[in-house]
Length: 382
Image (cartoon, helix red, strand yellow):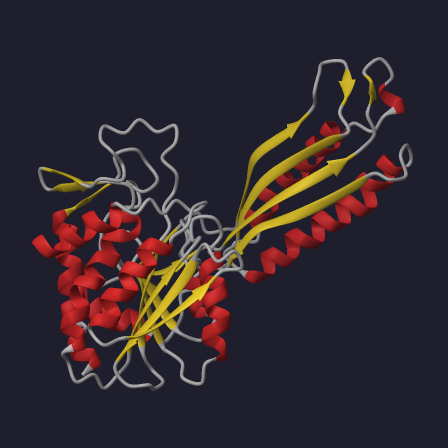
């Protein structure tokens, strides 16, 4: 346990907030894995300030097992921490610091076990996938997926170590985030008919999103295991306006969509397109011909769909002693690996309730359980 805490303390010391570089941490991990004989590949993003790591122990063959984690953490600005968030602090049986549970605790466990895995006569490859920008849209994992899809040898199982209190998760909803922009015509508040009020049309759009919320409930699949068992829409913000007496010419709506089935995505997109082109835009352009409504995709991360069969589920259930699986509402990179044809589960140390909060922590017991699971993985690899 002492080694894991030393590793976690070191990794917490890298302030890998999503908007900043993750390269110092990635270089540290790469050096450790190369030292034990792993084949390490680094894939930088377009800026050169971030990189994915993909490392392999064992034979160059199909059917490998991926241990997946993300390197980035959420910001700490505006949070009331009782200690330095980038300096791990042990208190009782908890280890505090940004990323302790989400998800550098799992990465520390993987690095602690890497030398032991390297000593085995592996019949099945073991891969380590460490990505960037999971917290802002899983952009690193999506870039890595394109690279893995082009490889001649493919892994078949992925274990994503997000915090689940070491419970086995075989399903979560997708997470799609959008910003819809409205461009109208400014004017004086005393003559509203002479302008195109972008805020008013944005409000109508929000009303349509609320209407679609109810329609999605009626479309809930039979025997759906998610909670709630239907796709959801949430409006995160409506912004616009400069003064009480000015007709605003621009506005934006920020919203979130979490589908339980792909058909709901098509339904929502077609309904919103129809509403904009048949209702809102004709009214806006009757006053101002250049009026526009445009939607920006902030991120579209596919969900992890419960699947049969699922080798990952069978392996991890046997290693943890679980006799059942669960689904969760939060998103992960698991659906991206599933889209490559892998069987996937999410299982890792710590609680999602602690993630993203001030005084984030992971319990020592959770790290010990994670190490026990990874140690049990040896039998599957040899």
